[in-house]
Length: 280
Image (tube, rainbow, N blue to C red; front, side, top):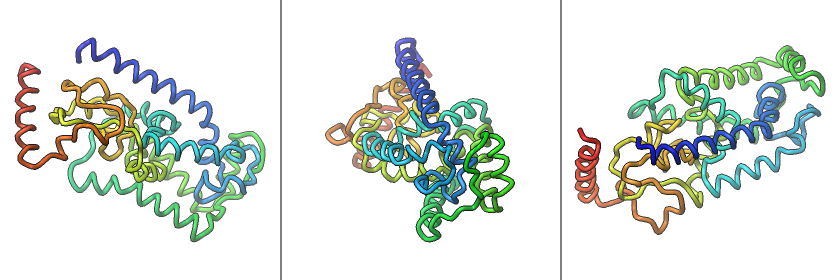
């Protein structure tokens, strides 16, 4: 990557890191309480009835969810890449991951459907089972001691759910962004709402499928594809300047949306141009 392209990429990257750190300070305590002390089967959604008086979610859960939903309409899964505390943890663990690339074919599609399955399960438990308590709530006390007491007085379902979440996040050090890409129910919801978003990163007809955007992408995807969280890391790495931020309507159609003959012809021509430009 040339120095002129590398500088704006670094600026976007560090702007995102600062945003993640700020939101982790603001939302991190709520996130930890939801995983480790929330007595409900589905955390973060019954906070108004929660007896854990120390949890900040009792006051802030509605504004937080409104903010997430508004951000989804404005810019898709940007919350995942710019504000989610788990997203920051996944980014840091992903640097050490040995498996960074997504799988091929049906295996990837099956895993990618996992977050939708978890979302459906959460909705069923919340609506049909009325989101039962799977642990005795520890109303107040030292955080770590309260976590210990919560584990001691929780049933097997709560322990299984909590261990599952913690293990999936931790395994991000082996399979990059395992939780975010394949299992996060919030990510599944935002992926659905992503169809309605106003602004997003997208690829224009100049895209030659060189793959540079995927190489820098933390979740190994491309703009407008599954798991793209509009983080912007790929925004300035495209050698054909085919990645734009804005409303997709009214812009040049992406190569994949053109007629089959035109798509094949244009792709072949751009591949030759890309090979020549790289000096291979």
